[in-house]
Image 1: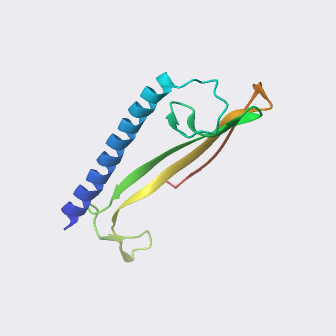
Image 2 (image 1 turned 30 degrees about the horizontal axis):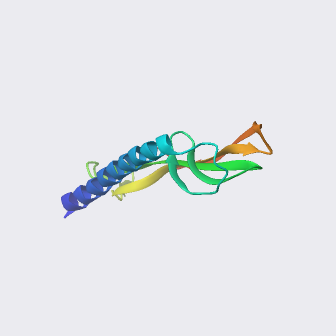
Image 3 (image 1 turned 90 degrees about the vertical axis):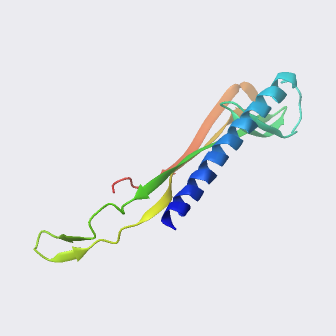
Length: 130
């Protein structure tokens, strides 16, 4: 049962990776044919290192890009019991799970003049000890 759960998570992660690569390749092909000077808010799936274009007009542009990764934690190989510093026996609640480790969201573009660019970001991360 546990091996099937790990296999299923691995399958999901690999499938997500392959899907994102195919989307990036498709976006690169579309970008070659697109005119970069178009004044439109038409949705462009993805642009490398710029992210998703959310808005574009004569007053500015807004791009959003996200970066995230997961962490696989397996404590099943540890002893379930140990003796603490005071000599008391303790039980360890071992676990095996996948955690969202880090999330970063980047906002880039320009406002009022193409020379007036901006780069804003927010991020969060989980503790990685243990």
